[in-house]
Amino acid sequence: MNRAIQRGAKRIAILGGGLAGVTAAWQLAQRERAQGDVDVTLFEASPRLGGIIETVHRDGFTIDCGPDGWVTEKPWARELARELGLHGKLIPSLDAGRVTYIVSGGKLVPIPDAMRMMVPTDLAALDASPLFSAEAKQAYAAEPGRAEELKQSAPDRDESIAQFVERHFGTEVLTKIAAPLLSGIFGGDVAKLSVRAVMPVFVRMEREHGSLILAMQATTQLTSCDEKPTIFTSLTAGTGALIDRMKSELPPHWLRLNTGVTSLNREGNQWQVRPKGENHSFDAVMIALPAHVTRLLVAPLSPRMAELLAMDASSAVIAALAFTQHFELPRGFGFLVPSGKSSSLLAATFVDQKFLERIPENSRLLRAFFGGANAQTIAAMPDEEIAALALSELAKILGPLPTPAFSIVRRWPNSLPQYEVGHLDRISELEDLVHQQPNLWLLGNAYHGVGIPDLIRDSRAAARELLDPQITSK
Image 1 (cartoon, rainbow, N blue to C red):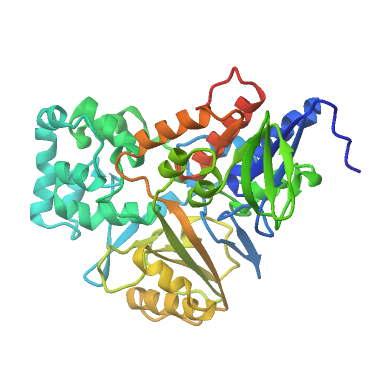
Image 2 (cartoon, one colour):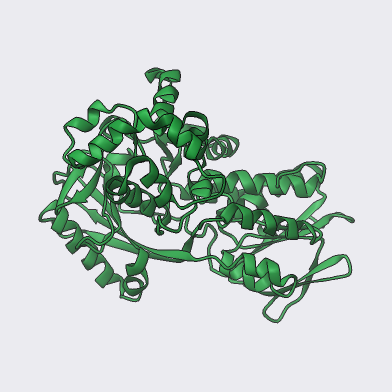
């Protein structure tokens, strides 16, 4: 039986039931459980929570349909997992066999050892690599000697990732490794993406050291091999376990699935939230929707807010192929495909070589990613055709593959907002305008990071600030 709402309880609407919205709701539920002075309604237009966080369990396979884990060095997902009682379910990536390949000349060429993104910590490791030409290797070798020049010439304004990488290492490094790596995360154009928003750590390295290679070497020397965590972390039951566990701790009457909100406005000291054919009043609203949807809702409140939310977003299509027979794969986590190559793939993951406990014995699990310019065309195809295309494209690179036992296809339209040059300034202005709207918060991957830990950090901080205005999370 639902407990009656305590008189004077703060009524809060959360619009959107992806990771950001569910995390905010869970954080508020901790307060409701302790003090009973919070009442939340979470509106989600689809029939399920989680957004692109979804895990399918079928015939002994654990298949993540969106992100399959998170970057370990960002602590916020791990902290939440522990609070949810999932600490014993955390699993590290299999870094002992960690190799990522770049498709070059129709073949898989490993990214050299001791690389962080496009920056090597060991120049000697580049010598034997067939990935780079002699000219690119020379550009790498010369970069430490240019440290003071690079430090002095670092621009005061934002610039694109392409400009940043080319200044340090040249065009070949940009096209062969930096662009594929960033496209695999953002599905975007490195000529437009903001280096300050997407790679702030590297910008700080340039300011402090000039040379990224010298900065990376200094960082590596401070951390012994025994202290280094694995690159990625996940959960034995997949990333969807985060959503499942949080949902289990939410009051059921808080959830309104299959209920999208069509308009939002403020009357007096109340927010009016209108799903189709309904009208509800709330003390506070947290919008955890994609930027293009949020833009429509806030346009009547502030045309400038809507203008600042007008950002490009790329789409993704994922095809998971489950095989019930074992076959050989190259050692490693998977591969990336530079743009302009013959394959329509963006990337692929050798899932069972990245994390344990993903497959039954003597099986294999591959995930193929389509994105960028191809995504919309491919998304319009039936599931069976997408799975067949994925198998064909994988076979071109990996060699003949058996017929999958089954496949799972997911389309994630406009799921990856593009942090283009000037993003941080636009978001700063946007947040100033949001502050002028009483008890309104914007959450999600359009603002301060697209990864699972980033969304968890921002959503929990916003919920705490809502409950205690003395806390400043923005």
